[in-house]
Image (cartoon, rainbow, N blue to C red; front, side, top):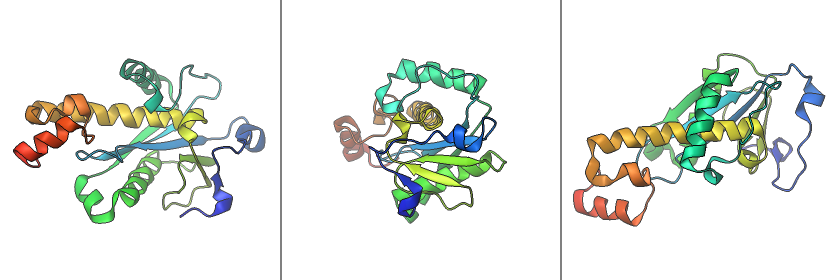
Length: 195
């Protein structure tokens, strides 16, 4: 778990990281999607944005419509300086627990960038097991552009995977609920069992 000095609370003002680290600093945002569903991987993204080209509309992926997320993800895939995806499988979730699996997916995404950033900003209360200079930012997906970008890429990637799962197992309705425990999903589980 991150020690207190590595966590920025929800109401705490965010420092100007670029003023402290320099305009050319490599700042990575990391977030995950898929901690609540009953099906599919937990997917994390690590993103480095072009500080000179801000992308309007970035926000917590949960606050955006599917159309907005898809549009922003498409722009991010073209304009981000770099991004990487990481995941933890349902088997890893069952073995580790969802929190540890989420942190593992984040670790994989961060390490997938293949570089040593100046700072990694992670959404939430805890940090993955890595040696990067890092801060956990509570509600960071709504407060830090890099984390918002990671939130969007992780969510869109996971949602696309659930739509692909729907093509294999249409009786579960993954295209609609994306694996979350809706009434429809629970009914399908009772009727068909786990896929």
